[in-house]
Image 1 (cartoon, helix red, strand yellow):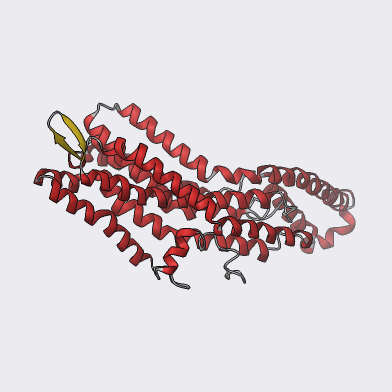
Image 2 (cartoon, one colour):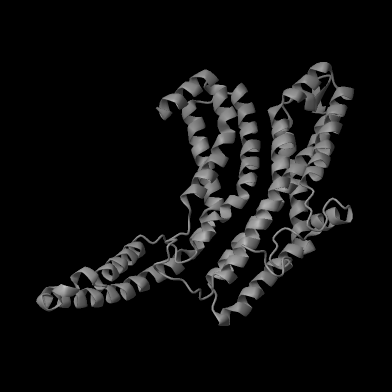
Amino acid sequence: MQEPENPDIASSISGGVLYRFQELARLIRPNQWNAGLRISLTVLVGWVPLVALTAMSGSSTSLVDLLKDYRVFARVFIAVPLLIAGEKLIEERFRLIVRHFLDANLLKADDAPRFHAILATIKRLKDGWIPELALVSFVCLGGVLLVGKDLMLGAPWSVRNLGDSVSQSPAGWYFELITQTIYLVLLSLALWKWFLYVLFFWRVSRLELQLVPCDPDRSGGLGFLGYSPVAFIPVVIAGSTAVGSVLRYQAMYLAFSPEWLTMFVVLWVTVVLLIFVGPLAIFGSTLTHVGRVGYLQYGSLAHLQAEQFHEKWVHERQAHLEELLTAREIPALNNLASSFDRLQRMKLIPLDKITLIQLTAAAAVPMLPVIMTQVPLTQLLKIIFRALL
């Protein structure tokens, strides 16, 4: 697929306060995401001062505890790089979706202005300062007041003993104010982009789309939307890694039953699928209507063709025996039957099975470190090996 003629209008990333700041700092340039540079700088800001503060204000044991703390490692070295690198995938997938709506002739001529008005709305929200600043401010405040202290209060490197009392160490404060905030801001911005995706889907679903009931994608021509959640797989992995790191820490010091862990992982995967796959159900009513109307239309057509076929090759067979080997009615009847069968198997949600598997894996695999705290690696490998056999 080609890029849209106006890539700025069809963009879901290039805009907003933080994007413009990165442009001014020349961290992002035209047609250059510079993901490697931005990841390196973000990791340096989130990690190096944290190590330095721990080394200066704590003992060697505290430094070792920090280096072994998977909760910090998961955010700094896994989640943050994934969230930055994943921006390009979100951008490319949104542009392809917009271009496909235009190239596949899914829009009626009368709806073209409304479609471009939808894109203008997305652009206005994306470029707006107020939504992004409000979101970042809320996340920063919530991260400092609620998440940070509860997350790292039990970590030896993040606290210091003052006689009978315990207070946050400089390293602990740095994690709350900087390291954790960087992760939360990037995660919230990624979810904001997903909200723009969902808003785009909802507004487009209200247009009178030119859908074909027997389209080979079994979704009336909207099957390509089933690949849209793939754009957020890096976000899912990042979030699942962070959640899994906290759960792993708790599982190492608290008694969690395997059944409880299993229930939690299943619930987490379900929530992830509802967030990133659930919005595709917006097109459910449209596809249901297309399927019902198509069933009547194709049913009527199939009946007329079958009636003519029956009349010619059953009632008047003797008069047409010489045409039997070259008769066009037989393959035509088979082709219509195939189209009718495809219509009967039409999906009410444009969901791709591979995408569903990928999202499930992205949400579940980062939970393996949690499971390994309760199930030894050798036993886990044996279970997987037996399952494969």
